[in-house]
Length: 427
Image (cartoon, rainbow, N blue to C red; front, top):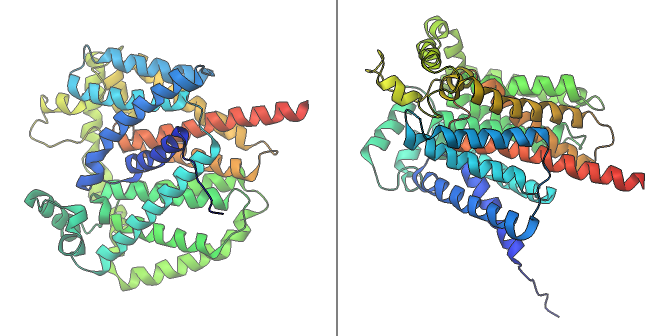
């Protein structure tokens, strides 16, 4: 007898979520995935609302979740007085979608499928970065149908300058900071397996090397530091059964391999050369001026700020008007200026409470291995986002917002399911 498969609306919805969340979080900025990002966010928003109204019909509110809701409402209100109303509206839609994701109960198996899909995409982009390094101008010559399908001259020039002037490679992600963040996500997926108590496999070591080499080739300093800091934190906080002793041989081999690669291929030294560049390290590539501008914006309206995403518009009307901007490169100072004290306290109270809750839950010894793996992923993403926030714009780009809120959503659902499990065992 032939097997028959029934596809329910719920299964279709979950299949779409795997596709949409993966594309939003790690799709990169090549035209097609980037062009689909906002439509996917709109579709997810509609889907989450439908689930809440037609299926779930109730929400389990916790204190951190309440602060996330207050933050979303505050951002919506800030549209009315924002210095850049259109940008604030766009970001409000993203935050609205992400907040709805927190309210919807999602099965742990769905998160596992999303993480697996993200791992596959991260690996494809990592391999494309390596190809870009070993085959000169390969993204322009052979993969323009992905990176630049319309043969846009501006995009082609930007890709060429990134490789030949910045000595950086981004592969299919098409922008080095985007690629570096995606490599961080890939490394976190591997961390989640290594520190969940699962058996260390050759595949894990190989993926770790590929993601690490691809990350080095992006040339992004802070995003190079983030996974190292995260790995150290995991060892200190959650080293179970001497995991560091299991991983140590692989780390030693990796150090030897990296040493020889650096000696053979100068471009692998780009990120290290940037650390050695005293001029850029002293002024952090001009970021100190942007941080001063964030504080200037804060003092103009310290209580309520000037609207989420308003930094660029404010900068264009400042003494630095002759420069091009992509936000303030310190999310803490910038959000203080854009959301004021009220909004800053609301959003970071939510994020910090979620992060601390994740640590507390991970400390519990009765966590099943699969739940621990999900929480290690959640913890690592949150920590990397907090660290990257000191020089990056992690709460202002839709893909990075979505990754951070996905990590928070994992924590909320795992927490609820673990409490249910403990209650059923107590009976």
